[in-house]
Length: 257
Ligand SMILES: Nc1nc2c(c(=O)[nH]1)N[C@H]1C(S)=C(S)[C@@H](COP(=O)(O)O)O[C@H]1N2
Ligand SMILES: [Mo]
Image (tube, rainbow, N blue to C red; front, side, top):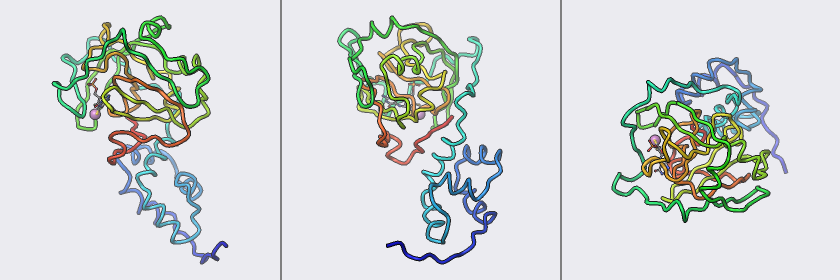
């Protein structure tokens, strides 16, 4: 039985004041661009703001809130900046949850990419087969939350083309990734379908070096570094929130750059 709720009125400007400092910088910046109504607040938070309890619940879920704000404001048609090749950073930084000495050695001839979840054609892919698909390149900036950024050139298959080819259900919520080093992450479908999201096989016009994710990584200039999985061994489409290696330790899941 639904409890009868005290009919309190909610002071929207006050609420916004409470929420603003809890937003991360990016959400705050994006937030400033829009006029916020109580309707938008309830929609973004998924809470019906009818009583104090629901307001509290909303304030508690501010981390999810940040994700939702970013997802809501993500413009699938807006391109991340691209750069001239003269601006490429050399040497390009390596980063992983382990040091250089533990970089995985993967045999490209033995490699298979597994597909799972809401995908029609789940036949695994060999590296050579991926290389036969139409390729494109981009020079974009990789931004790591640890406080560095670097410009690099990546090449590969448009991920949206690949998803279409394998018959992925693009109305599903998430695309998840499992990696050879046990790293894992997941992204929202709109970002998966973004035209700069690349199933990446090359770096600086050469076979993807082992430190940067050989044999295959996903490159997204619209997302922070930790959302860009290297050494991918499995791609799956799902409606169940898959989380991620850093995300499960408190990083914001959406991770927009
Ligand atoms: N498989 C895997 N992918 C990963 C990571 C990792 O540890 N393992 N680290 C992430 C982080 S935090 C960053 S910044 C980038 C670093 O990519 P780079 O080595 O090409 O600069 O990879 C991301 N993808
Ligand atoms: Mo990172």
